[in-house]
Image (cartoon, rainbow, N blue to C red; front, side, top):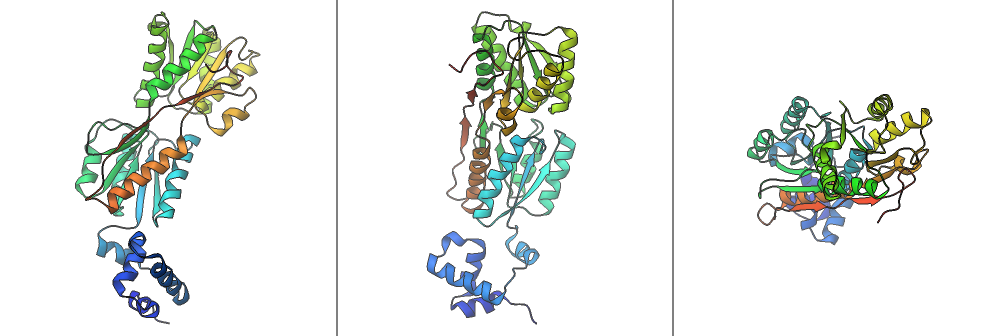
Length: 337
């Protein structure tokens, strides 16, 4: 059996080949009745688009890239879910890359995405060097930052105010009576870790305490296992009144170490995390956390990216900054203000 072509679909639907192409590539520009007629013809004839050929003709594929720091973190899983849902609704596929916080690995992933001629890239960058993103833009590949603010007006970004989040977390611990605080964080090369520490210091300063008194435990990764190690280190060094963790996975690991050692949370040590992943509410002692609109980050970033890809002449770059929300549970000593 010979391959069904766009011309065959057009003849069957009673439209031009250009209309079929629009249904495949720009469905929003085709009247609903016409689009449905073409889609019915595609289904009846069993037409399958030739992906590589369409890529060569259009210069880009119907794919976008998503590069995240740690796909093992449920935060990024939710971001990816939001991105994939929007992409699917608009006829795109998502290629996922995990940098694991490595700028070298991120660079390799971005080169592969460029070779695949993706329409655009969503990225939570591993570092602050914009050069590799500029190279993508020079090749006509749109870039939107996710969970990272933009420092230039000609680029979209969707982020959460991490300084405000760190400030709110530590203010909550101070309101519960904590005076000796520890901050358990991932690598301080990661912007989010640095800004959450800045917020913590700001809360201490506002309350009249020396921000240099904040104990900082920098872990190599932001996993539950690293959190367990941090908990053990805190037990060896002498427990603080309260612990603020840069994400929930670290906090859950700290919690496990403390409970195993017979420490009462929050009576002996108060504990708060960041992200409000699903596991936070379901832990042995439900975890207080700073909630981020994770799924919405992925959705809105993808909407901005595809608008820039499909409507470059009318697209307006946006810098969207969400505010995190304190969710107080059993692991801290006082309710949310």
